[in-house]
Structure formats: structure tokens, C-alpha cells
Image (cartoon, rainbow, N blue to C red):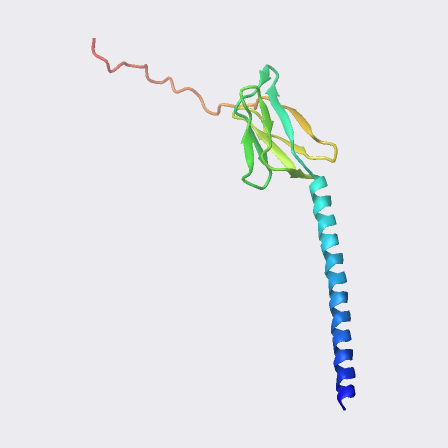
Amino acid sequence: MKTLIQKHNLKSILFIGLMFIGFLNFTSALTEKKITNMITKLQQTKTIKGVVSNEDGPLPGADVLLKGSRIGTVTDKNGAFTFPKPLKINDVLEFKYLGYEAKEVIIKENTQFIEVTLDEAKIEMIGALNSGKPYKSKRKN
């Protein structure tokens, strides 16, 4: 009877040991897959630098934003910028400056440096000058 119990215990221990080894192999395969995915994602992200200008030269203070988010930066006195977050392929950067038309640039696989030239916005003044009354100064001489 004692040997039967020992054989049963031995089989149980072997079964548990095999299950444990199988579990370790399974989790290590998952861990390898996760590491591979992380490396792939890191390779697909890029730190982007660039310059924003108009026809006269660099534009200091131009906004550079990731479309659909609140993440962005502003160009320095030379119109240069370094985006604060690594970007993925197909992310869209928006370039804006007061008095100029906004532009969008899609990040591609080989994008590392972006040169953007903004065009002046066409501004129309609607209405007419009200010159029905002559101007009178309220200052007394």
C-alpha cells in the first residue's frame, strides 16, 4: 500500500513539474513576443526636427502640433524645432502661425527633418469705412 501511494505521489509530482515547465516555456515565448513588439514599435517611432519659415526667412514662435492632440512645441528664434514626443509613421504635424495659412505634414518612414514654408493668409476686410461724420477731438486746447 505504501509503494502505491508513493507511486501516486511521484506521478502527481511529475505531472505538476511538467505543467510548470510548460508554463515557463509559454510565458517565455510570450515575453519574447512582447519584447519583439516593443522593439518594433521603438523602431517605428522617430524624433523629428525641422525649420519653419516664410519667404523672408525663419518664423520664430510658430506652433508645431500633433494633429488630434494637445502635444506640441514652438519654434525658436531661428525657426527651428525639435518635437517633444517620438512620432509614429502616418502621424500628422500641423504648422500654424498668425497671419499665415496652416500646413500639415504626414510623417513617413524616412522623415527625420522637416522644412516647412508657410504662405501668408489672404485677409479680406468686409464692410466700408464709416466716414459720414467728421472726426472731432475731445481734447480741449
